[in-house]
Amino acid sequence: MTEILVQPATEGRIPSASRVIEHPAWPVLKDAVEEIRPWQSADGSIDFDAEGAPSRALAELTVGRVITAVEQLAPLLPHDAAYLKALGVDLRRWVEGGFQVPDFLDSLLAFQPAAHREDGLQHLVVFPMYTQNGNPDRNLEAVVLKMVWPDWLAELEATRYDNPLFCGITFEDFTSGYDTNSAVLFPETIAVREAPERFSWGGIFCDREAARFRRVTEAAVDILGLQLPDGIREMVGDQERCKEAFVLWDMVHDRTHSHGDLPFDPFMIKQRQPFWMYGLEELRCDLTAFKEAVKLEAEGNRHGRDVQYAVLFDRMFRFPVSGDRVKNYDGLGGQLLFAYLHKHDVVRWTDNTLRIDWDRAPQITNQLCAEIEELYRAGIDRPKLVHWFAAYDLVSTYLAPHPGSVWAKGPEALDTSLPPRKLVDEVLADEFPLSMFYEALSKKLKGVIASTRGITAADVERVAA
Image (cartoon, rainbow, N blue to C red):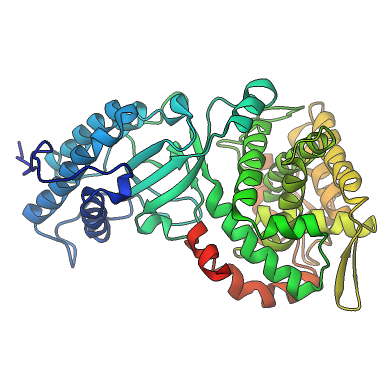
């Protein structure tokens, strides 16, 4: 069995620090992880015969540095003691197994951040994982994060929006896999030998979402000549307010996936469906958060109005023009919201200026939510293919399909004797292309959106200063 050289964590040479990232062991850990990442294959293993691969001895020493640093940081994180101990075991097992495909199931099961939702609580997270909307490979990553769980949010979760697995989180520091567009920490991205029966947490980095929202919204407002009411302009300029809006939006959105009249598995796991079905589901969850925010505002909750405009602006300005045009379901949802509001005269693009009827926006946005909810309610009584066509009809009422679309021609253009999943092959990569408005906006926002890669709250505050 391979012996890993690990410096004792109890040696007195390392001074203490209250923040993990201020402890001298953190940069040692981060540098070691960054050294390991390029050696790994897409599945997380290390091929020592590959060009540029290290010697096995060097790989063992470098993992040993990771283990030592974790042990030195562990006293700062007593709430993660079981996880950090299991992490050391999984890292040693990876080395002893010859750096094959990593299996960190034991440490994943030991990591339980939702059991300690305390505002400001730090966590050190080290896993081989891919980062959603970031790095597709299962590289080793190290992240230091803090929990966002203020009293007002905890009360809403306990009394109104029960979501015991949800974790609002912010970045303290991270390795390269998070120097990307990823704003989530999900257990299903981690390399394990088998998926757990159920996941017990899910984290969303509300600080990155808020920072990205602010930069893109400010640029879009300037490009479109949109006049914002004072209260909304102040919100867009305030990172803390935006962060609080996003953590509330995310909490309600997340729980909505399993609430309502659902004619399918709420998370659509292992289901092959046309991408507009995913787009409608994500939009339904966002519009439910919007609807709840309207209620909260009416009750005097100061976060209600902020959530409404976070949803509207992120959905209308960023989502449609982010990412590529290959089955971009989030982009589709943003296009649909804008087109619906435009058709109902809530938004107007006149004289190269965008105008919004702020008084009618809540009512009409909730009206779209109601249409999607009715689609779902009726879908319970429909066969799958019929439901897909009903959803297509809803979307195509407001968005023009691609002129070459087979689906746009109706059921008679498809071989309906095939299983529904086979008919998904007939869906075009860009079934609902961008409108001329969004084509123009995309060109002007492209650079701004690219600049939000890896963004943190500190980045937007530096620009503001």
